[in-house]
Image 1 (cartoon, rainbow, N blue to C red):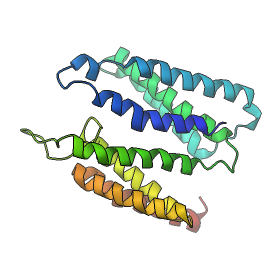
Image 2: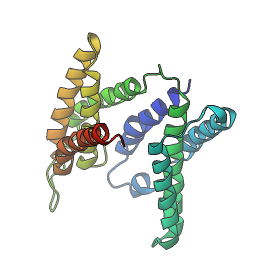
Image 3: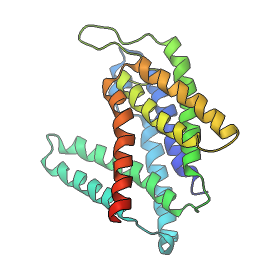
Image 4: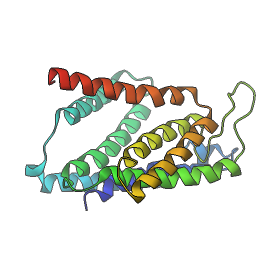
Length: 228
């Protein structure tokens, strides 16, 4: 029950919302730039569900150091609203970001240990990978003056597709460590993710493909050596 909320958050952020934006006409600035009514309903509802669960299961919640640092960083982001150029706009974005974090972190901490949260994330990104592969053939690449060439998929820009492909690739590698059908599917989605990454032509995302696992490995080695 608790694992379904982070999964729904992932589906909305990587599939539903980008497809809504992709359906907007390029000249329709209101559709593209204005706050969407769907988001005004979805994220507050998920955050409310998470807060109710947290209140009812407070004795079960355990806050590991990583989560404490995450909330501390979020609090500092909220404090920065005080010196923002547009405090009202910054506060709205901070409030939405807080709802997103709460909707993901709290249910994940309440979920039982046998809940395969990583599998749920992989399924979400696998579906989005297939849909983006179709979108690449349906939507032309970004190719206009002062813009770097690259396919955006159904996202708002090529860098979004590149960032998405990196996460999809990392989740696919994790899935490929499991035997049987899970390994086969993991390899297939990894191939699609690499293809999307190349088609996006996002140089930053390509760098993150190497940098992120490298930093994770270095952190793991430091932890084993120093017991931090």
